[in-house]
Every structure is written in structure tokens, then in C-alpha cells.
Length: 227
Image 1: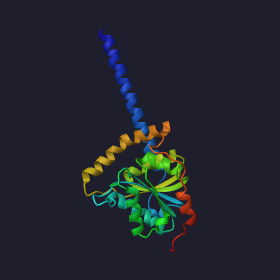
Image 2 (image 1 turned 30 degrees about the vertical axis):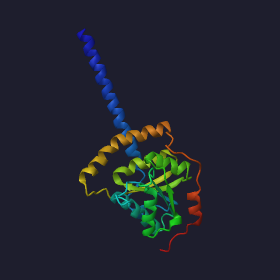
Image 3 (image 1 turned 120 degrees about the vertical axis):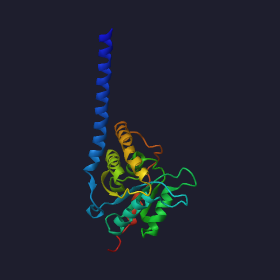
């Protein structure tokens, strides 16, 4: 009886070790795969038709959060430099009081990006949905993404899995609330596991929708700004 219990414990331990290795390897694949697509600065980003900006929350007054402003400012710089021609902003507008894409568009317009060169995706409920919708709904097959550095590698993994030829550049994750920055980084572990599962299963976005011509129309009308 005792030998059976010992063998049982060994089996459980071996299974736990194996599962741990699988989980660690999955996170490494997601983060490591994304790392190869990272560019060190905005100047290192090659000319690309579209920049994708994922949402990151709004302030109580409805304007972009600090993290989101940093993403949008980087996208505006890429546009001003002539590196990209269209900005695809992707976020959540499930309630009339939380319309991320419109707040993002308005911020970009204030920074000098023409409104007709900003395309809004109202159903970017998470990173996976943003990437899949960019490809399947808006027809984006080549893009650069801008987001905080801790999030960048996972987003690059998800967008590449969605079929986009993608590169990315990270923006500051410095926070006025240091605890939040720590939480966001720790959260990348389970989020990376979810990203891998979504990619393997081909999870459909919450809102798929028909093909939209917004990006194509914006690219047709867009001209590079004067340098």
C-alpha cells in the first residue's frame, strides 16, 4: 500500500513538472517569437501602410489614459514622419460613456493627423480580437503596432498569428502608479498562455462582422505629409 502511494505521488509530481515546463515553454514561445519583430525606436520602423494602436482605457473625462496617449503620440509621430499613411485605432465602445476609438481618433486629430486617415475599430475588445479584426475585417496584411513594451511582444505574436506581416515599437510603461506597472507585467504570463491558446484554436473575435473598406479607402486617399 505504501509503495502504491509513493508511486502515485511520483506520478503526480512528474505530471506537475511536465505541465510547468509546457506552460513555461509556451510563454517563451509567445514572448520570444514577438521579440524578433521588435524595432528599437520609431526611426527604425520601416515604411508601412498602417499603424495599429490598441486601446488602453480612458480617463473619467473621456480622454485617453496616460498609457494610451503615449501609444497615440507614437502613432502620430510615425504618421508625421511619413512612415505610415493610416492609423487604425482599436478599442471598446460597448457603452455610450466609453468610446475608446472615437477618443483615440480625436486625440490624433489634435496632434495633426487628418481625421480621414484614422480608421476606427469599435470591437477591439482584447489584443487577439484587435489583431484578427485588423486582418479579417479591415484587410490589413502589413502593419506596425505601437504599445507599451511589456505588452508589445504578445501583440506581435497575436498579429502574426492572425496573418499580418508585422513589426512593432514599444513606448514607455512608466506609471504614476508604480504598482499598476508591476501588475501589468505579471499579467503578461497568463495573457501569453491565452494568446497561444487563441492562436492554436483560431478563436474567432467576439464581433467578427463583414469586410469593411475603411482602411482601403483611407489608404487610397492618404498622401504622405510634407517632411
